[in-house]
Length: 163
Image 1 (cartoon, helix red, strand yellow):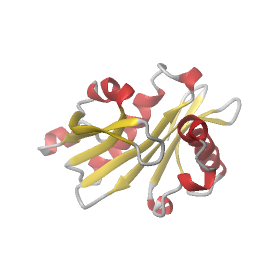
Image 2 (cartoon, one colour):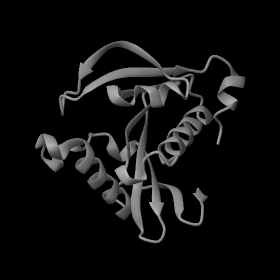
Image 3 (cartoon, helix red, strand yellow):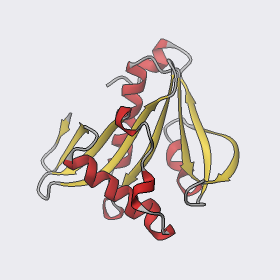
């Protein structure tokens, strides 16, 4: 867990107050404008995933969120990364991405994947992710996405991302 004067980075449990704030943030920024019911944004495995938030300590408000899913022994997926618009471009997304990448590599990941909104591809490319395949419309929102991945071919490469 990282703490600064204003922010706290922490893993939260499914169902916790911070988790509930994060789901509202996800809904507001990803789903609401598409008139998708709030209840439909949850995956069946959500309880088993790792949930990471950044909280504004003075307002006790979730500002950023990311989720890590383990797909197989050595493959992990980062999902649902979101940052409050007025806090974007302040390093919060980078902190979420690097922390989740570090957890995955600590657990033996050799492959890290995500489905990026096309508008955010350059952000992920800065951290070594490469696009795979063709652009596709999200099944829930219709927003254009593309699969991205980062491979860790050696222990040395994985070590760079350890927490």
